[in-house]
Length: 417
Image (cartoon, rainbow, N blue to C red; front, side, top):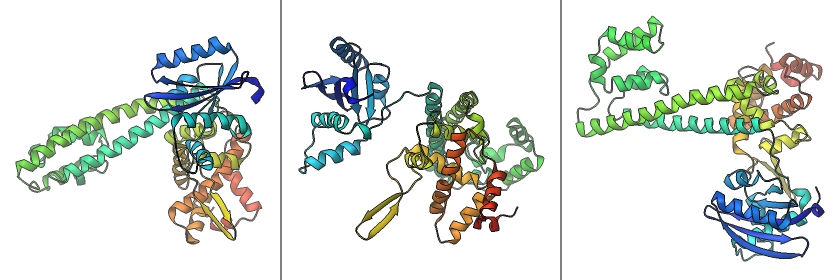
């Protein structure tokens, strides 16, 4: 669609309570500014007014939001063609012509229109895409938030236990399990744990699927040898214990919901045609494979090269030059969750891919830090996965190692196969 196909251009400077709108009418060449509230009914009334004025004519709408409530509200209307624009682009464009750094919402709304009119080839139109993949993305991102919340709660529980019941931290390796939570609820301090008989403790552990006799015996012995409480001061123990039990109750809810999220994600992922392509990747597993699929999406024409994909995800470095100076740095503007997904997976892939571990060790011996070595490995994996994705061909470790041998790659000497 060209710029001549639009009947109007609209720039929206959105906010939590109001949206400033600048409308340029292509037929009359006139501007109109307005403000609408953020309630769904207000947005619907505004869109209906546009339909009464322009019918089914296409309207280009630019907003500083790639995801969010306003975009979700507008994407359902066929007459609106959406162009999400990075807020930094608007800010830098404004500063270029307003060195005073003066800023106002109506001005930013007009700048959005100007960017669409003068630089349409540099803007990417928002495409709805596959609803299943969009749903999967929401689920995996929400799951990641729950995992972070689980870590936060576990750390707080650990800190609280250190003030009155530190012994229990040595009895359990994992603090983010239902077993640990239930133990604290049933035995909230060292005295109650030591008062329980060996038979009671054995029944408790077996009811929580701890079946190894050696593990049960070891824990019972640790409890019996735990010694006295850290402090008898009730002014410390009672509030800390109450806080711990409150946090434990929250943690159990998170753990329960994570199970539900995992089941839903697995169901959505397995139903997608590209699922086998990512499920077989080394180290991907049930959590990272869906996230990798979301990073690539279903539109294979979206990224014309591996470099384009790696730049979008954020694993391709940025090169800058000025005069005789030249430097390379980490890409700052990118979808953080997708880059995090790729980096996390690459780190896991080292355990299942011999050449990945060899490449990582090569980078470490060259003096790079762990993070830089992982970034270099991510860049290498990005090209491999892009080609597999483009050709719809599952990754084959043996085939890739054979290609390394044929090219006489230095990595071959490091391989123990």
